[in-house]
Image 1 (cartoon, rainbow, N blue to C red):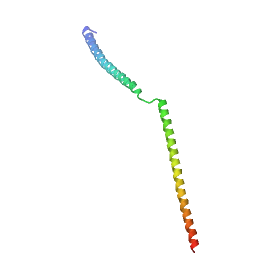
Image 2 (cartoon, one colour):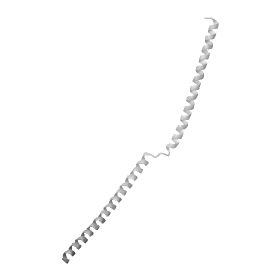
Image 3 (cartoon, one colour):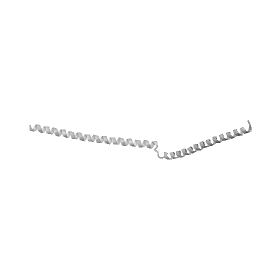
Image 4 (tube, rainbow, N blue to C red):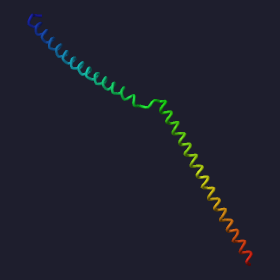
Length: 109
């Protein structure tokens, strides 16, 4: 190898190495920017975690809803049975009135 070709080789090697370093720097800069963004998002997420309900709170709420639902269904069933009793009482009164009318018609014959 002569001196002139070795200088061209070193120059080409330095250019390739410089380009690789430049591209590597851009990659590292992008990665660091993304890491900072993720850290900021993580902090925001941690702040929002306080607003979510805990498991115990959810269980308590579900238990309360179940209790209220059972009470409401019991009230509905009670109201329906009372309503049916009133209907049956009314039907008994009608049946009695019809029976009384039948008795009167027999008396007048």
